[in-house]
Length: 324
Image (cartoon, rainbow, N blue to C red; front, side, top):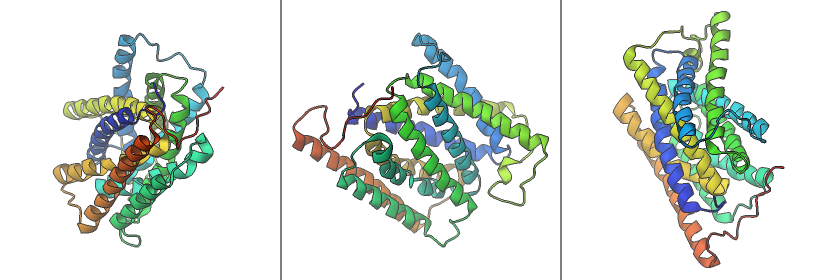
């Protein structure tokens, strides 16, 4: 696959965001009755069968460790910690607010891409990232009730996710995205079980801490209906994981990351329809700014591509050094 196929990267990313945000809404809904670690464990377990079926169709053994397995494992651990933090944040914050804080992620990607991947970040991308970050500040209004420990968890998830996606850019050149995403789901399942055993074995109780209360709720076996919903969450997880890897495989990380701002549309919609969380004026204004920032970046990319006059090549990005 070309390292600079931006239309394909955009298509993959939009599909990934649609599935991922749907999954997040389900996790938020489940957090009302189930501990966070249990919901994430079922998410990981339910994703494994679709991966195995997909791998069988593709005639690919998902459990043969590739050469870059250490980097893939590191990526999975980082993304697991980031997702647990995000799942805890959406248990107490409105979905749109948590997503808005999480949108500092492209800022981290843009700042780290040059150091981690050797990618040159054009000035217009920095401007797009800065505009998007400004929109986040408008949405959450520092000093307001949005800045709680749960908000800091969402902020950490942005940093962890940025690091994970930068690693995606490296490992996707030497390993199949299905293998990478499957290892991620297995780690989510195993890591959640470890947390569950610790919480249950030590009888931890964080009910006095709203941001962590959902983590230590007692285990509850899901009803048939909830089990089916968790299975759907696993399918969404499978699809979003593969599409995210393919998106970051198809184009430079600092191009793909700002486009994730489009998830705000899904977050606001789910917040209203499922949870009755109506965003206020500032949340909507901030969302408008971050979406406009993403569209501005896409427009500038098209202009730069046409000006270069070289199909399939982007003059602003230096070559990627593949791992040995």
